[in-house]
Length: 360
Image (cartoon, rainbow, N blue to C red; front, side, top):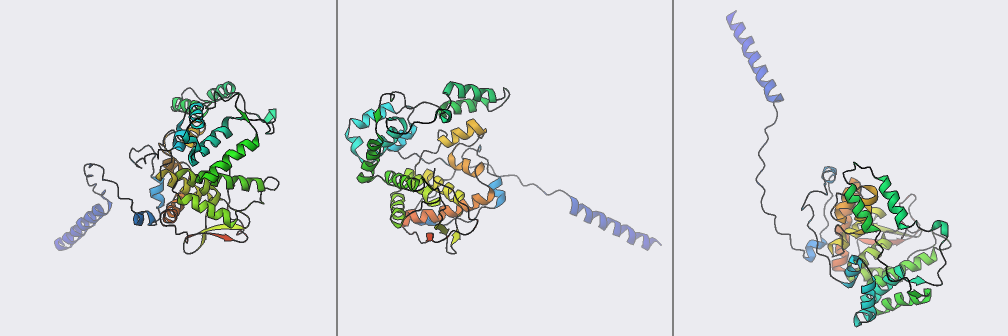
């Protein structure tokens, strides 16, 4: 009897011990103390050409653009174009270029065109329908402020971003006039001088002209494709943005295919990959980037401190973020080595249902 009792008791003890081991909470190991940030890896051509693996969904969902140091900022490439993009007013820069040898350089001619296109009064350009004209700034500001809740924790940031986005940078150009032919010649001069951004922009305008009467009639010729590749090969970040937008667009008879298996590129992810690469090569992508300011003002997306963080956190699904990481590897190889074999534009009908974006 006593031995039977001892066997039952022993079995009960074993059962309780096993249950405890199965149900006890896991031990949490103490995290190591933070160390100084490691030095960035060298950006050799081999490293730049390496194709990164996919990001898993949990990694993408864990991205927090508010985390300082998440993505070290890349110094802006100091050029006339970056000076133009950062300018609060254009008049002084325009006058300086018009009256100095700077304005006769390839990039100087391109910046002069950009400012004139934005600010000059084109006398023979069709006048905009009054109903389609933008509302006065004062009215837009009043409507914007009325749309914000007084308790909105992002109110101050959004108002500041609105003011930055809506700054009139063309003060002083009210009496600057030219014809459309004069403006076209300014762009042609920049192209002839060899500016890669001007060449990419001229190709974009050629496509737009072809689509003027029929939106789906425009496509890229082999000469235009070569011109875009050459513009990108200069490593000019602004040229990457312009040329990348055109190469990311779906055309009726032209499809971009990526990688050894020739997968059809998804335009949005491809264009975002081009934009992020432009940032890596020195395009102004910090907190004053226009897209970040607009997203903060109008969408309350104010936590990203750089365009790459914004695109990953706000502008991409986990699937898109995986594609962006893959596309970047292919694009870097093309830029650094000139090998475009993994990035092909295939002539022929587009696959049914393949996504597309149009040049803007």
